[in-house]
Length: 215
Ligand SMILES: C[S@@+](CC[C@H](N)C(=O)[O-])C[C@H]1O[C@@H](n2cnc3c(N)ncnc32)[C@H](O)[C@@H]1O
Image 1 (cartoon, helix red, strand yellow):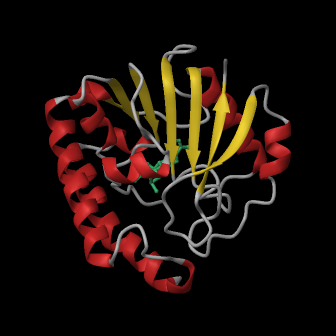
Image 2: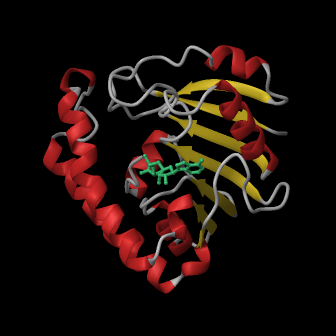
Image 3: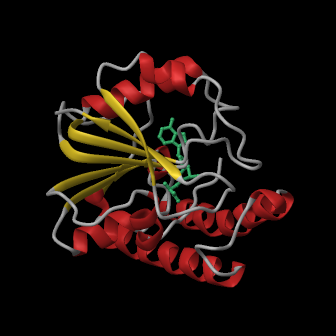
């Protein structure tokens, strides 16, 4: 799996964020710069990802290699992507390179913000974060992780949140096929769920996030 580095601007659009609450978890944060930028805005922001177990040099290498690898997936499924949000591939690469740089700088100066951890068991107490974000793990990798794993992962994201969990996208990686077990999964959750449109689309038709509300 790729350790990609989406930017704060991409997170803002994918999750339709305006103001951030006091505490936010980016779960499966990879090389994203969201946590660094949220922390710079005064938010108690934490990133969790199994990749943070890697020795520093290997993490740098993994994040850097994920950019061309991600672009190859897009090239292989060119008909399944639209460029309305990014404008063109050059702008996307620019955002991702800047985000990777920002992430790698922040890991070096504030390693306490980057916690190694793997769903469906996160190393945080119950209700630790007001908002929990999950970009490009659940549903994206539904060919690798089955329905039961998704249910356990969603329950864990709910456990560590005191208010809201947001997940994007709701389709498989590559061609963007729908995830067949999604409706059934929502029925099985102990909280209110809503599928909400967002001002971002890259995979064709993937312009919705899942919002789980705990209050
Ligand atoms: C495609 S990347 C997304 C990174 C970042 N959220 C973004 O949007 O650019 C998927 C991330 O999920 C992480 N990952 C893989 N399995 C995981 C698991 N079971 N629990 C948490 N993170 C996982 C990978 O290490 C990788 O960094």
